[in-house]
Image (cartoon, rainbow, N blue to C red):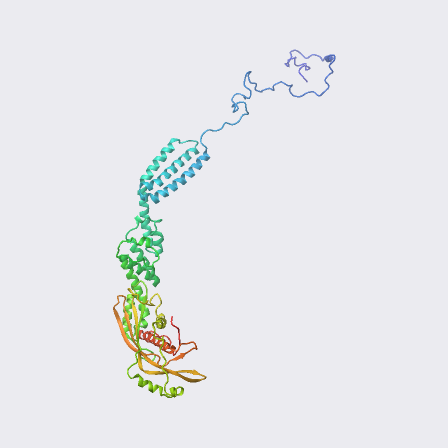
Length: 540
């Protein structure tokens, strides 16, 4: 009920004074306004909300003349003017760019620092190559830190670059020298306890330690390290290599660098003279001599004189051999040359014709030549120099076979001395032979159909042998002269293609082989197996 129909309130909604009045009869409703003539009454729904053009209560209405787009007081105007409202862009360097500057600056400073330490020892010029990027990196990193705080250093970064670059360049030589001095001392101590490879790869390597920091003792110390490693491993080849290098370092170095070393010439050629080279050589020599002594146990005993020994050992020869091996213990290699020389004199000895008549009158000769004119087979080319190489190989192989059972090739290697070549500083075994005719003959027969057929007569020969042992200086340590009868009783394996003089060639082959067996027996070695059958071999 509204205030207008409540008797307790007046027309303004306030309590009315006075006592309540009796109820009044209802008043008639005032007449509704009538529409104007010609306009039909509105029959649609009752409109809701505010009529068009009416501003809702509490809405800000700008004063007249205010530019369009401005909000209420306290609001930021749109940017740019005339566009919708947007947040303002913050001013200053980007923090993300600052992070990139910081990272790249630290990387550049690291590179510059490495260059400064590695090359600064060369002087201020080389130090500047590292100091400039080091200063630039530090300045860039500082600028990056400032940018992360939305600040810019400006010319301050350039000043920082110049100052740090100058300081780094000035301190570069001292820093680099200190670094390499410390590193050289550390690697030097480490290398002494390891193999030669540590010296080669970690010390004598200018990429690791520049040459100016190598100490003079390092060359000798590296050689002694190699000597300790080789002797500990009983590596004969490595010991020979150390001896060869020590000899070269102590010499005038005009000779080629030792091939047995194979490396190190680029820095060892400038090594100073040092007593340590002789120490390394002595270490290896003593170790090699101990190895030789172990092998010499079979030769150092008194000569065997029982029936088991085919040849009686020669104590003088073995004593000379021991002296020779002592020289080999400090030699650069284990080569012992074997030199051959020979002469031939086949002039018929006096009275040989009478002896020939006796052989021609033998029963076996008359069975084939009843007139008593059995022929003497001519020597042909059997004693010509072109057969020397083959016979020398026969003797050399027999010697090598016997020595190889006791001495490894790294301890002793027998090699033929080329004709006309000097042995240099190598020990030498020399086999000299002189061939003569004897006042005798052999009957030469061939087996056919299980029976022997007389072929002819062969004149007999003997050989004067001289065996000499000389040391590396050419001094004669031993000499022995002996004589052998060639082919006194051997079986000859013939072929249809063999020349007529083949028996003489085979006789000399057997003489060389048997003499080499005798020599090995005199050394106290086990000689090669005895051979009673030989076949013809053409000249080489």
